[in-house]
Every structure is written in C-alpha cells, then in structure tokens.
Image (cartoon, rainbow, N blue to C red; front, side, top):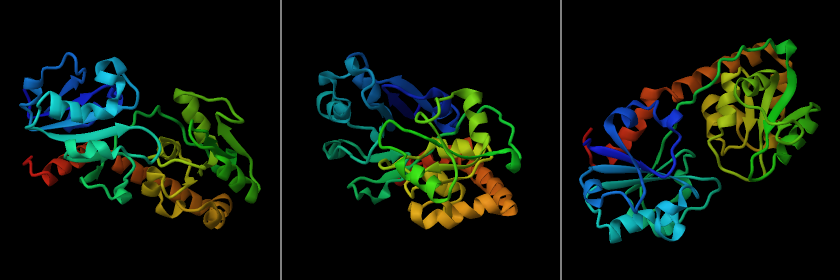
Length: 288
C-alpha cells in the first residue's frame, strides 16, 4: 500500500499516467462506494479525488457524484486522509456544500479568484499529440477555431470578420476531425481563434494549436494561451492589432510560434506536472 491514492469514477489514463508522481507514488482506486473498503481508504495520508461529472452514476448513492466526499466522511467514516478534490466539468459553478468535507481543490483552470474557503491548487496534464509537420506561413489558410458544447464561438467569428479573414470552425462550418487529421488541420492555418460567449477552460485546443505551429488568440480565461503567449489573451477588440500583426509580420509570426511551443512544452513536462501535485501536499502539511 502506498502513501497516497488517486480515486476516480472516470479518469483520462493517457494523460494522468504520464505524471510520474501519480503513476508511481499513488494507488489507483475505482471509487465505487458500494464496493470499496473504507478501512483501506482510511489508511492513506491523502486521497486525490478525480471525479467526472455524471460518470458511473451506479457507483454512488442517489446518483449524485458531488456528494461523494460527504458520504465518505460521514457515512463511511474515512477521517484520516486529506481529501484533495478535482471535478472535471465545464462552467464556473462550484458546489459549496462539498467544502466542509474536503481539504483542498485541484483545478485545471487556475480559478484562484473563486475565493473558496479551502486552498485551490492549479494542476495540468501532459498531452499525447500526434506528430505533425509545421507548415510554411505562406502555404497556410487564415484562421481555425472549434465549437464547444457550451457557449458559441460567435466572438471569434466577429473577430475574423473585423480583420477580414476566413474562419474555419470545427463543429460549425467545418466537420470535426480527430487524431493526426485534426492536428494537420490546425497546422494548415495561420492563427487559431478561441473567443467564446461562455466558458472558463484550460483550452486543450489552444495547446494543440501551439504544438501544430499555429499561434492562438483567445479570452483571458484560456489558460493554455496565456501560458504560451500571454500577450495573446484578452477581449477581442483589444487584440485586433495583434491579430493583424500576426498576419502581416512574418518575422514576428515565426518568433511567437517558437516561443509559444517552447512555453507549452515546458509547462506540460511530466516532471513539472508532478511537482504541482507535490506542492499541494506540502501546503497541506505532508512531507514529500
């Protein structure tokens, strides 16, 4: 038995398994509350809870996954471990009812502005990206974007109109693509646009664009864009000149493509991702 566990109802193994700390220093436990042994769980020093909205509803009473920490504390009497709670979902809401039963929150969106009563720690996952050949600037099309299932990319559409370029939006005016075909499509465009009417997200789309050699402009809530090129996030109207410069200044374009790629690559290095989880533990008084 290891000191720590990651307990989950659905977990993206291809990303989390790349983080050495989670892979090598944590037991991985499917969190079926009808089958898991509370005495075993109570022996860990810390349990990272990775919960996906709506997944495996038959694993927890009343089909309410947000009540899992409360059930584990009150009904299952699991009191020794620190509970570090991560909810994989969209939007900006948070169920404050869970706060009395957890010790900390880990989150992909860096929502430290929430002002919650428990410490919130930013984490990130490495990405598995199909290799893609970067295209020459002169061979590229205009702009690429993606339609998420929440909100709409209307601000991106307007931005493209304002600087007089075509906007190819996956899931809207272009069919969705996957794997290498998706990465190739990103690489075929000069810029990515990630302005939306709603949503606070890490923006995997943004990170993937930088891996494809395509710089991205987007909302200030798009964490990956902020990491890659911090001058490329903000309100659409405030980035018009930046968008025009990317399309007109080839030397500037090549420079920011390189910087964005290097910044994202360093940020998602597996060892760097490990340190974020260890930092959270240290802040909770656990030596590691």
